[in-house]
Length: 174
Image (cartoon, rainbow, N blue to C red):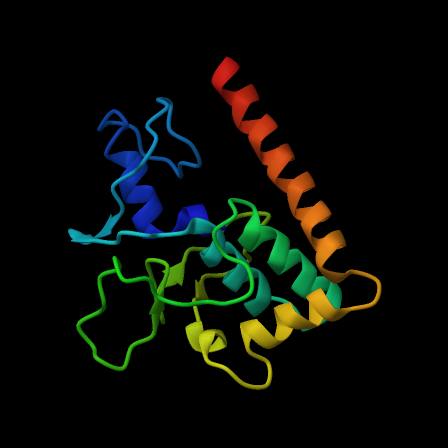
């Protein structure tokens, strides 16, 4: 879902032939780092997995299992786990009170995606603020759950990261 974000699409379309119009998930070339931007404004530190996790949370009822899915989606590149925060290298929005984290600005919209998102989702970063229902509270509940805990979370994350790596390697073989 997060790969449909304008920053991600812009970075990949810049590498694609100009006559191709499609939603891109991977580059045909092994590019390493991508140059993320929205409407010409750079978005250093952009994380598609955070956009995916936010969209997941916003389109489902809150539950421990749903939060586990959000954790696994957000952590599958090892960058987003217990807290949501902006990093020093990020570019802030012009609006001084607009929340931002990991290259995502509060209120940005992901388009509807057949089979994934029935309708567009406006990303809500209020979860990054501390308090009841916050990202941190929800993820700490996973860490502290008797049937999960830090070691099972780490094992599940490792499994998802390995599967993602294998899928990417298989795509490169084509």
